[in-house]
Length: 238
Picture 1 (spheres, rainbow, N blue to C red):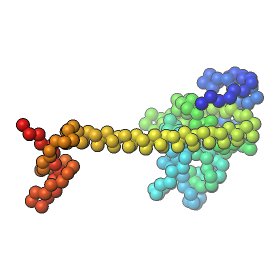
Picture 2: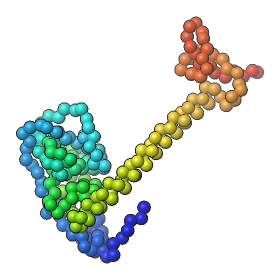
Picture 3: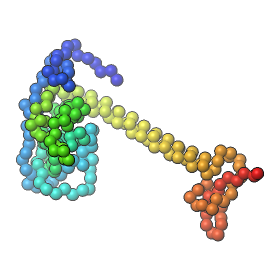
Picture 4: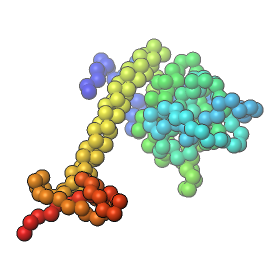
């Protein structure tokens, strides 16, 4: 897919970001987003890392129970999974609730669209840089200092909204194509196994006579022997 280009670009000042449209602002994440740390005193809608699908930001319901304190968030807050950030778990809250576990809760200012912010964070280059700044070897986490100092590229709020809506539409189409391909792959895998099974138990000659194999799992035409059902295998006359 070829995307339209703007008339003029400028150097962002960030090596991995490269050039950006000339009218976009480049700042630090922490200048437009505040970190929420307020503890939750009740449990109404707990969100844990396992609820968030990697790279898509979709919410996946589970039946698990979650212990421990949570951090209260509001609708429109962005939950960033700071544990193993390479998993890219970034969720835009649709309702208020409690984040349980390793999250940075980001509250965008009025100038930032939560959906646009989510897409910008889910940029693979962004995640790679954050992942490279983690602390802890066995349980690597991203600090707020490193995350807050990440560059944030901002067009006008209206343009952010248009970009996020475009990405919602295009990624939905791509996800639908992936789902169809996965169904096709499953059918082809089933056909592959059926072809192998038929060839090694029935042979290649469809007119060859068959006989009871004496083994139930060989399948195929069934014969009766001692009240049990058995598969049949080919028998060639010599």
